[in-house]
Image (cartoon, rainbow, N blue to C red; front, side, top):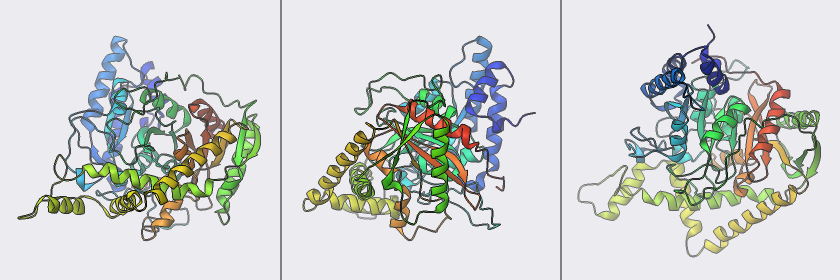
Length: 493
C-alpha cells in the first residue's frame, strides 16, 4: 500500500474524495510518524485525537456527499495561533500552560474547511529567531544531514522551524507559519519545502500571538506550490476583528495556477548580488533565471537602491513593536506570575518578565524600548520608518519594469545548531534577502531549487506586487517544474 504520509495535500484531498483511502487511515499514518519523530522536537503539543476526530467527520461527510475543501487533510499548527482548548505558548515559559477559550481566525477557517490538527508546532520564542534555538521547549532539529558523513545537527530555520521540519520529515503534509521578516521563507529554504508569505493583510492576525504588528503575516508551508495555493485559499479572507485585514475577495489561486510565463517580466535586483556570498547560492540563482526564461519570461535587471538599509531598519522597527506588544505579559492578567515573598507590584513585574522571557526576547525588548525612548525616538524609530517608505517606493518603481522579482531566499544553506547563537548579528544576517519584502508588505514565496555541495536544500524567492499572489505562485510553479526538486531528508530520527 502507498505510504500515505508521502502524499501532498492535493493528493490526500483527491484520493480521499475518490475513495482510495479513508481519512482515518491518513490521520493514523501521520499520527504514527509524529509519535516516532520526537527526536526532532518539532511539536510542543501533540493532538492525535483531534486529528482522528476530524478524519472521522471527513469520512462521514464523504458518505453523505458533503465534503469540504480540506476534508481528510491533517495539518500542523504553529504554536503562535490560539487554539481553543489546546495549550498555546508561543514557545515561551511566559505562556506555558495557557489554554485559550477562543480560536484564531486562521485556524478556525482551516477547521471550517475540514482540516484536522496533528498538534502545535515548535518555534522560536515569540517568533524571534532564525534557527528555532530560542524556544523554551528546546530547539527543533532539521531532518536533513550534510552528505559529508558528519553528525552535526542542523537548524531548520526560524521562526517557523517546527513547521518546516515537520513537513520535511513527513510528520504533516502542510502547516501554518508566520512571517515577520522571513520566518516562513527562510525555514522553507533550509528544509527543501515551499512557503508563501501573502500580501500583508491577506490573512487575519486575530488570535495570533503578536511580535511586530505591522509586519506579522500568517501563511502556509507545504511540500509544493499547489499545496501552498490550496492552503492559502482556506486561510485568507477579510476579518472584521482585525483592523489591518484586507476587505478583498479570495481568488481561486489553485484553479489559476499556470507555469506559462509568456509575456511576463522577471526582475533581477543588482543589489542582491552580495560580495562573498556562497557560490552555490549564486549558481542556483543563475539556474533559476534560466528556468524562468525557459518558461517564457523576459528577464530584466532592476535596482532596489535602499536594500542595504533594510536589515538595520527592520531591526529597529520590529523590536520597537515587540517591546510594545510584549508589555502585556506582566503577571497580572494571564500567563506566568512570579510573586516573590513580600514583593510589591514592580517587583512582580520584574520577576515575572525576568523568568518568563528568554535571552533573545529580552534583547529585542531592550532594543525596542531604547529606540522608542524620548531621547532616541526621532533618531532611530522615525528614521527607520522613513527608510521603510523608501524601500516600498523602490519596489513600486521596480514593478513598473517587471511583474515579479527573483532572488535567493537566504544567503546560505542550513547551518549547524549552535554555530551562530553567540553572534546575534550573524544570525540576523540570515534575513538579508527576506526582510525587504516584509517591510513593503509584499507577497513572497520560497521554492526549493537545488542542493548545495553538502547535499543541503537551497531555495529561490519570488517577490510579487501587492495582492498578486497568483503571479508569485505561477512563477514558483515554473521553477518547481523545471528544477525537478525531489530530494528529501533520509530518515535518521
